[in-house]
Length: 361
Image (cartoon, rainbow, N blue to C red; front, side):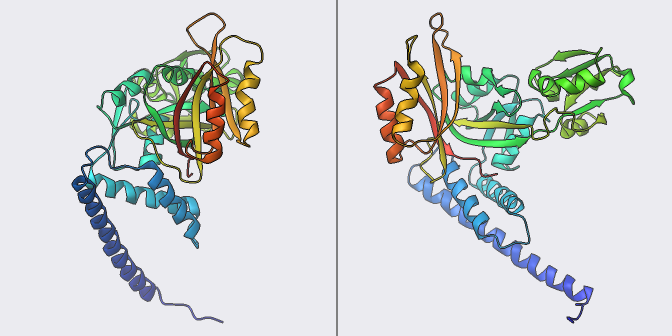
């Protein structure tokens, strides 16, 4: 039977390990500063953030992790470390759908870490504008929800935008009913983003059937409005509850337990292939017979897996549609490049929106 190590001895071991960790953290930060100097000497003046490099580092760390810490925990710790080191090189400004406390802000922190400067803006078009004008290096926008499907406002912006998709992040979304009141009987109106109202449709019908549901620009804005009126409630995150000092009346009221929203990172960069990537594109065939087959055939021919396809009106002609497509692989991968080249001969319009690393967690 092994002997029990005295608590004082264990604490001494922890203190010694903490000192080593601190030294290594600062050693890594010093290397990051040297990287910045090398890039500047080579003439780089833009963002030093490289989504492909970060994804490769995080995947490597996950694969090397022996435990007992969980893989997601280790990835989270290293993401924050990389965020802090990057801020020493050159702080990032990232636009998100504000105000403070939205799920989009959570996606920013999950993808970039907390050392970035998060810049709240009012609408999805404003996020695109902030990045396009150089006010922010990157923006994070919602693109798809597992319950309610695509976010049309985001897809439509890509028809005219020159920005690239350079990353993705997924957030498990838990919706909560918040308010200044103590019971559901005191609620006269519920505010939330239209997507969140839709994600909680059945719960609202079952529990608040006669209450007016009003869509607003974001969940955090809903929480702000609810904080000003004791008869109004909001569907929002627990972060919003803390920010606006609201009671949590009901937790996890989303209709689907695995409710997840996918966000994409937009910017000017074109990440290189990492071996675990996606490519997004915009395709139009015009109003013709067999249009969808012409799109799908090249991917089938070269064995490319299609992750998602969504049609939207082109706004150019009646019954003319564009298809938003996500496929496995990077546009520089041999088979993907061949499939894209073949696709060009079958369609009227093709626009590559970006090739980028798959979400690490």
